[in-house]
Length: 292
Image 1 (cartoon, one colour):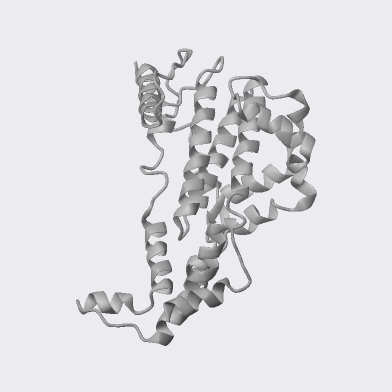
Image 2: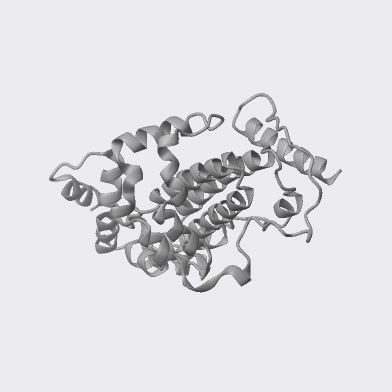
């Protein structure tokens, strides 16, 4: 009965997501019956405290970016990965089996089992404001692709306990990436979590799959919190409009001096030009002159 409730939960969640994305129909899963695990939380989708080690996960996540481990970025390998990502209902290409023993993913496994994850971006956000660059964030989505591939190979090999271990890494990665002071990082974290949900569905449909009802129930709600990112966005606005918080607190406005307007335009000009993909030599000068 509980297994049936778990299947219903996943189907309804998939249906809700499909409707939100404008897709008709319901995601149907074929789940083999399985008894409740003993103990009830034998399977978990996030690493337990007792499995975590001291230290900052960010250091190990970044270590996994080492160029010597970037086999997945080779053109011929990338082509195979993206071909599978276009249709994850199909088995991955056997040429990608090296991912199962990837040293890069073992580093991500270690990172996902650290005590905490601090990207140390809040001071940078205060300094750079809206101009702060995040060239590393999209790279974390590559980890989720590789983890998903490893999960599918582990399922095919009947190593379902190993597949659950990989799911733990993926959900921890999603949570850690999103635990940051910008909404962009939250969006990437959510995308990683959605990738992991697809892998949970694959594990649940595998022959001799364990009962994951309590594992799903035990996931934090929400897995990804917006609190830190929204507070970070406020810091960004403080950088763009210094003194604005004090003005709002006193419920009165003031006229900005010419030098304040010029400083503000100087700060916003690089962002405006980058968004417009146009950087004429005298663009900054023109913006400042118009402001004055």
